[in-house]
Image (spheres, rainbow, N blue to C red):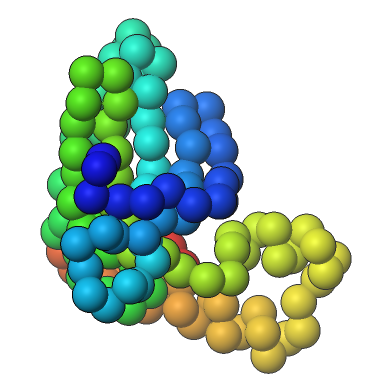
Length: 132
């Protein structure tokens, strides 16, 4: 993890947190999102280690502009780090929750993106939950 400078917390879930970060080695200075998963929380739950493997395989398999790109995975003694493309704007659920509703045009745009993403993922032989 010494190759990245961690920034603000973007979100947290059951098994870990996601932080904004910058690569200390890249000249582009482009930000990434790093999902940090606590190994003991995942490996002690039945089926979760297989779920992590599937998530890695799926994200490496599918390349599409509406699917978050996985750059690399790093593992330490205590954590698993997913270095992913950083996507501005946050989660669609939070946008809907905040505004209460979407205009028909906005809903159409998001729905169209989701359908194209699902078709792409299915064509690659998987169903992907990580969309942008």
